[in-house]
Amino acid sequence: MTINTEGTGERSLFVSYISEVPVWKSTYRIVLNGKARKDPLLQGWAIVDNTVGQDWDKVSLSLVAGAPQSFVQNVSQPFYARRPVIGVSSALNVAPQTYQATMIPGGSRVTGMITDPSGAGISGARVAAYNSNGEIVGQAFSTPSGQYNLGGLPDGLLRVEVELAGFVKNTFTAGASGGGMTQRDVTMQVGSSNQSVTVSASSAQVMAETSTVQGATLGSGSMLGRARNFTAPSARAVGAGMGGGVGGGVFRPTAQAQELGDLFEYKLKEPITIHKNSSALVPIVQASIGAEKVSIWNESAGIPRPTRALWLTNTTNDTLDGGSFSVLEEDTFAGEGIFEAIRPAEKRLAGYAIDLALNVTSKFDSGSQRIARVRISKGTMSQEYEVRERKTYTFRNEDSTPRTVIIEHPVRTNYELRGDTKPIETTASLMRFRLTIAPKETAALPVEEVRPLSSVFQISSITSEQLMMFVEGKTINQGIESALRSVIAHRARLVLARNAVIRREEVRLQVVVGGGNEGAGTGCLELLPVHVHHKEDVRHHLH
Image 1 (tube, rainbow, N blue to C red):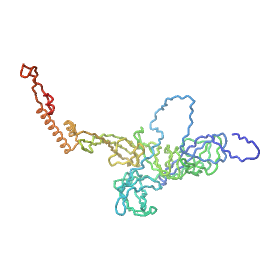
Image 2 (cartoon, rainbow, N blue to C red):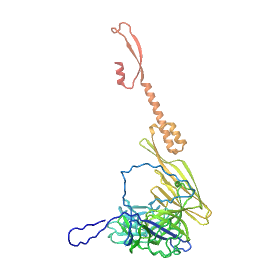
Image 3 (spheres, one colour):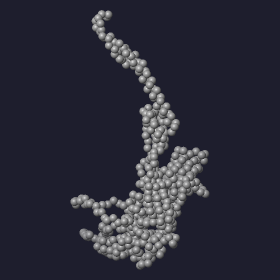
């Protein structure tokens, strides 16, 4: 860049420019240590490449991440469609997957009535549920009768606030797990909305039988690393995979994370030096993180065994940029995977290995049709019935420790879930169910679904054959059967009566056809059958 100055006198110039550089990448290490009984440890690095052709000597570096749209398109270059390259298959060599984000956090519900001191229902009251981090996880408004229903809530205790202008804000604690329902009625007191009252209860009224599975504490990484101290934020080379000891016993994050609108930034606290054509590993995060070890089974994934995974909860206050991660368990490399960006307090599944201790089979059963309702109104009979289908997932745990399995079952259009099995959360296209399997035991999870259908018949057109089909198929009860038989009998008698009337009104008229004067000559007599339905018809034919 060349700057030309013309004229006289001195100027103070501030010069800045934009230069294309490679995208910085994130990589993480998650350390599990069950013996230490401490929280899992998350360590993160940013991989920064200097390709500008000159050294970066004590530069202030800020790493910004997000998803702004930007692209380069070469429209002048000829384009050819390429055939796909198919590699040689390798048994149980599975590429890392990114699992779908949660759409419905859980299957728990909080419901009840909102009334005033007189007991009358209050309409339009706002009911909001917040998790332990103060983030809203559900919202609803009371109906004209005062009923409210907060659905799709995550497991655990929640703070629920009920407020409406002209009433004192009411706050209480509620929660359920495993798809349970909690009943909490609220009586609102007249007053200013700036006032608040907190209602405490000894225990929530759980209306459904539930079970809670607590995840085991997975340990700490305080003893991780016996190599060199990682105090200098630069390195000449970056190896593949972070599980083998990159970093050391001393880990000092040198970046401060903050939100930048739709983006987020890791701003380095101190200037950094990276030589040209070199790369650096910059520590950006070190914190405890919530993690539960589970196994994931998705039949459509096409692999014979479940995937070992971590159900991560971002308990840090920072947005974790998407990238690769490695898992160390008891100081041993356990696997690696990839996850997308995780916002604070968000939960994501991240797989890292194949679970060789679990064997899986599934069985699909399609049940018979079952009539749910028959309705007769204004000469029309409508039937509402259901087609029942059941899929049973069976698992065998050959390990000496328990297994928690997350079964991903597809969400199908026009199908409704039935039975006692409830999902713990739902994504855009999957329902997730939890199943715990004891060591050396077999356990099964049945998922029952129904597809509602309907059919409409005109009673006036129902035949005896159709009636017999309804009776033999046991799709109608005895009362409706008797009523329909009565309709068919009445219709048969009506047909007989109409035929009798037609026969009585059918007459044969003798019409004399001849010529000449009255009484003279002879004529020809012809008998013509005439069907008469009205007196006017008789006159017409006689004429």
